[in-house]
Image (cartoon, rainbow, N blue to C red; front, side, top):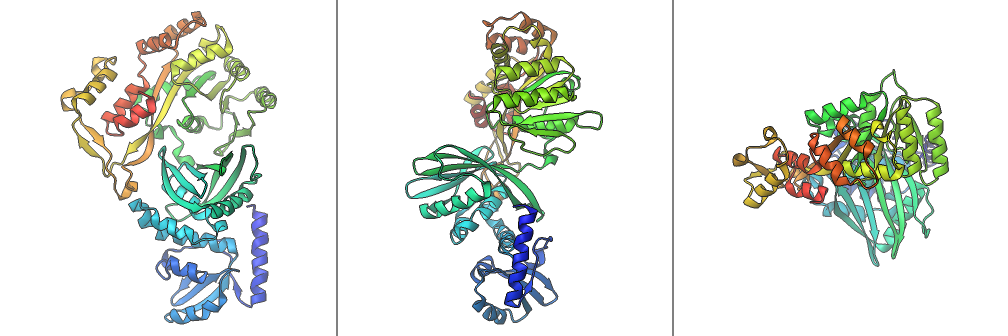
Length: 525
């Protein structure tokens, strides 16, 4: 909703208040609800259609909206005999947002216990057009990355992806699903009921842990299924303060390799891995690290996920390859110091990125490959035999995301013989100085507590492998042919000192950050 649209709503509400001969209250300025919590229950607010908006001594200001049952207001005044009550009209959307904040405060026990049945009961009483706001608020508060809405013959399931794992939250009847998704249609500006996939954007005002309203951007994707539109809403809920290199949990060796790679004024630095492995967040962290008044940074992104200060971000549609290449060539003519390409998807983009990296630009991008060595062979397949490829690559960093154990409840245990053998086998290629003391190894398991909503995990961390293009690696790539295997490149990289994804993951297991199961699932072992 634009500022102009909200202004129109508030003006209409003010005029309606005059018709009703009641005061008008603008909810847009920040309201501190802390002293108001406990004055009325959420159930009572919903039943009466009211929200407290101000209290001073015993003077209580209560907001109503256009849907409130005004015949209930005088009996409510009698029930609140200890207060001097005044009713004021708010806009419907302003009322709903204030109500959501009280709902979140009341739901704190639910969040801590991980029991979502009470939340589901509350949402079930709302009109479908008001359902998305509390669902989205809860998703944001839990730190969910996605909301999945999945229809079946009789109902629709809503699940959140939390730390990479889907969790059922509520189920709604099919008729309410239809109205609920109709509201999403209007919010995202998409054509509902289409037999082709649709995409759009949604913006909400979420309440953070401090009680402040912040803008949260969401990307909505739909695809027609047997019983209706299957919807996935991705939540861009990371604050820019978290997009920095410190939050990548790099070892000193990894941090040094990355810093050395991006210190060059030219060359390519790639992050590789499957969808959802944190590649884009790593690029944003790098951009924040590199951004200063002496450099010009331009990005080409589909879509722009986070807005960066002092960076020229250009939205592109990668499906329109001709337009994408025109924009990329136009960017090169502006001669930026650093170019970020959201993803290298085809040979033309790969060749242009290669050329840019050789002509005085530092090029950052993501690439789909299972490992850093697989990325080299894929690039060779895309670009063809090109002796300049090796000299253009500074670093290829493969990564995965694993769930991080909750520090408040994780439980230590001694590994069994099978686990010990797996760890020894995985770390066998490391130098002796990097080997742990196998006689005193201690691992940790997930338990669950209030702090982690009973999941046993809280947040995610990256596991990484870095293929640094040393002189020996450059010589291998330069003389390689199409027959060169990923395995040959990986063996050469390990000889140069590369730790594999599995080895880095095992290292984080031994540090008590995650579990063997998480690492095996992420790496595919």
